[in-house]
Image 1 (tube, rainbow, N blue to C red):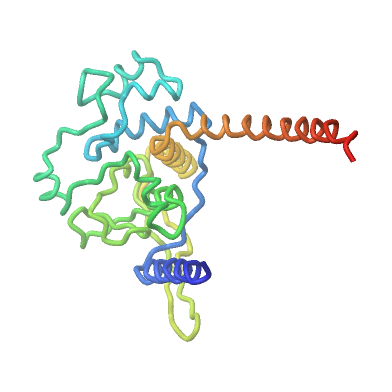
Image 2 (image 1 turned 30 degrees about the horizontal axis):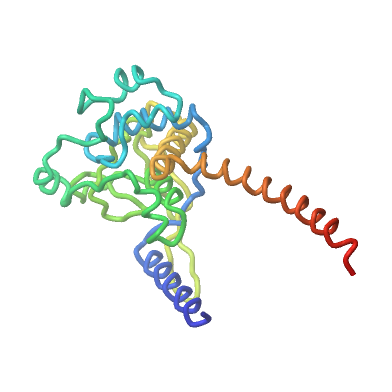
Length: 252
């Protein structure tokens, strides 16, 4: 057992070192709001308008969005662009061969992206996605014209740039253990977007919350039922304990 735990520690340490060596930045904490219906609805709107053009969610059906408070008519009128059937899954019509030619690879399915990142990364997948979508900057040396601090040399362009505007990262040179490092100090807004920085961060928080919810739509119900089960077991334990005491009180 100890060997297994030591092995896991070594693996996580190696992943952390490899991630740091890759030039990534520290991940920001995502403001998950998977119980906030308004937030999830806004996240679904952003996902359908900006992500679903290239990324599919082939394990999620449109009618499942009724679980976050949307009616079937609202789903049809505002979120369905690639199909007319509300029972269909969220697929895209883009040819995988064209996607590979344009982006260097077929854009991944996003149904389980938050959970999969948690499984293979060094932290919560929601934190990675929240940081990734907020750390794009202009880089004319890249084919897409964009680069990313959380995922350097990413093939995905900044599809939300009109909302965020263009920003430039500001680095500070520090020395640690005899090595010179570039540490992110902040951002300089080059051109404004249609949203303020605070509004953009809130929108990305809503999008990441939706991606987290989409990976496990029944999680909130599971947690709620689990709480009631634990309460029942607690009450039943007290009843069983008193019943046992009453049963054995005359037996010596």
